[in-house]
Image (cartoon, rainbow, N blue to C red; front, side):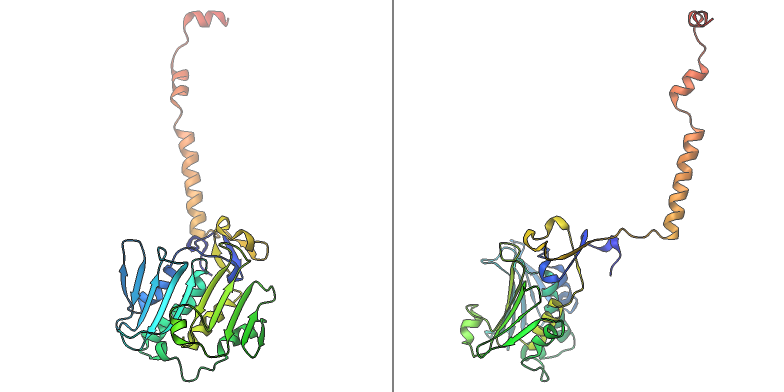
Length: 284
């Protein structure tokens, strides 16, 4: 866990699906930028990233046309329609998005085609495995597979039947949905993945979703409806190092010496100025 002075928040929150948004994209954008993705900013503060081969595109859209903050696509060729689409809305915890983009960046950094077509060893049920291992309930139905944690404040669904590709890419329907938080404005969030989204990218997202490791937030910014169910602990101030203690002692010593050696102007005046004769006579 980072040192307290490096933590952007005054509390730790767990589970992550109750932490709410930080309204910043840096944790999810930096892995892609470090992997060599190109960046373009528009006049509205939206950010667009693309892989050097233009086959992976990422949009962080705080001033977009809908409630979709993140739109991520994979393409067979630079000018081809998207093969897959992943989205996350404005209230999604950025750590969940960062899990997806970090896995995406790792694929690109290794020159792997897995970011477009997935990995050959990926099983269809793999994304649900980390949820089951974390104690989430997983139910497989004929039409829908559903997973929920014990507190029932997050939900993952997968449609088991085939979907129309055009409907998915146009964001009308999605093979996968993932969400969390108590029902209500700003406390509830949603992400989606289409059928062709590489399963290992979805698995990375589910792994972080079910990871109990707390995340940093400012308490006043936590979604009101999620606070009662979340585990919230204050960020402890950093323990002073021996050098910090020594510096503080030196500072106190200098302050004491200064007060002892340098008298105030008023005191100097009173002790160096003779009393008037009239005043002296009155005190006899």
